[in-house]
Image (cartoon, rainbow, N blue to C red; front, side):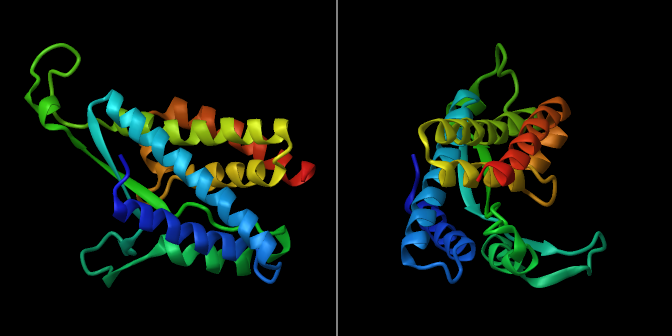
Length: 210
């Protein structure tokens, strides 16, 4: 279900985020953060892929990149900027007093209809186009599984994993560029509001409890 390019992207950003979180904190702290972040991203990716399967869509994960910095045609960089790899490191400088709180939205996803879905012309799949509603549910599935994992982590005593799960959900809900938050907000505002309220409450708890 996950191809080698996706695995490389997940592993790469996991290392970058773990390094940014544990800067100057020692190898053991880095290893714990790396395993936690990798697990968090993996369950998020699998949730999206399973949700995509429900709508008979193929979900592909890739590094978050952007090229345009404005709305006019000439307001763009010559090459795509690998924001998913740069933002975690840069954010460590901005959020330095917040004990490892760094940017944790490194990946985005694209979807395309499967061949047999495109061929259907009846029932609820009387169209082959992918709607914004579908994108919202796929992205929302990833956020929901991370919030559930955070709650489970706190219950069984894995507080660091729980904290990172909440941070991951928070940053991915920000509605900018091609991030999950943008897909959810434009596809289903009620779903985005629901997830945002829960995530903000959990975010506040993550700073108070750990």
